[in-house]
Length: 164
Image (cartoon, rainbow, N blue to C red; front, top):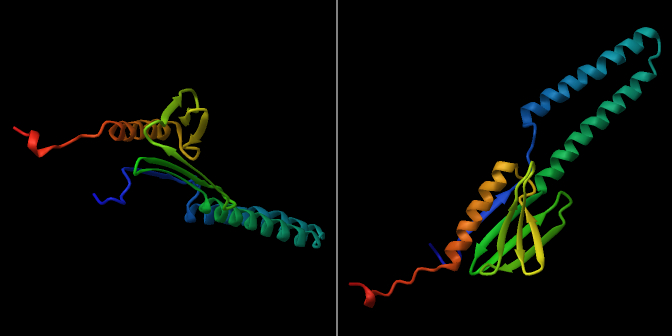
């Protein structure tokens, strides 16, 4: 392991409920859903409504695209390296929040419940992490981060002269 490699690193991103194929299917169903009323209005002789139906469909497609583009940008990373715990988060707008904590004094706390809350505390400061994770994933992150911090706090000293 090199000197620059982190002792622990976890990155989380928001979930995408639909993949590329699912998005195409939903947009195709919406196209059919918007086309049927459009055809109905044409049959009834209210053809100017067709333009509004088309505009609404284009608006829904644009909102889908904007949501996917913005959520792709967001992530959260927890890194333990060189005795420092780095917490960084970038939201969907690109705004960055970060905190550097002394790993020796940082404590991980998991408040269990229906939706567990995972926090890292240092003195009076409290930082919530794992916002993009589900309940089981937060519990797993808490366990792994606690184990990494424990390994950091209890180093193993190897002195060849003391070996038998």
